[in-house]
Image 1: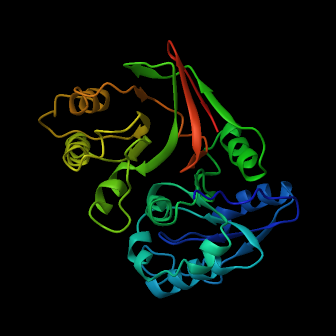
Image 2 (image 1 turned 45 degrees about the vertical axis):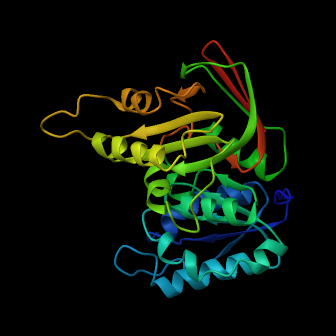
Length: 300
């Protein structure tokens, strides 16, 4: 049975942790103030300000913070402060037994895809692919509002005309899964690898070479993750690189080339990922995707 965490109410607690890269209180403070304006009580993981090279503390310190957040009896949501790299180093040591009994929203994106995939696949609990404190300075007001609406259980949908649609269909119902393409690729074959059959697959990425995108998409195809999906949502593909000898295809051409034989719609430039307008997505919850010409609407 699919489980969705309960909506938050004013006065509820939200706990911040950083399971990957290090972060400072100064970097988090504007977002903390925003959460307080929403009348949420903000808790900080006891190790969140630790530093160990690139990481927010040692593996053990980040593990302790995340485990405490999973087990926390009063916090209604876990907000990851930033991505980077490091979540995969602690995923197999985490005990989700108390979290399963008392699910709370897990919020973040990028490297946090590790937790989204693991929780969606193994426990069938919905998670929230959304903005993080590190992004406060660049995020749009729509980005923040999308997070607030979902957390407080308000009606929420995304409507955008800035998309490119290939092989359009009018209405599609299904659950969204996915996240950062590099992380999806890196988790293949593990206990955290997702099942995409009958799902809407969302992908986004940052700072990759074009041939890396081609390789990762082909790997997803060879692992049958692209064959039986209902639609492919492509979010921000930001700051891509090319070699001195050009690869010869852009992101759109790479993805269309890999997916040429499939008849599901592929939607490019969807407003989510490593972009300023990073709208929140509820992973592993039934939603309706409506496509009319180049107008795309996603309703949860």
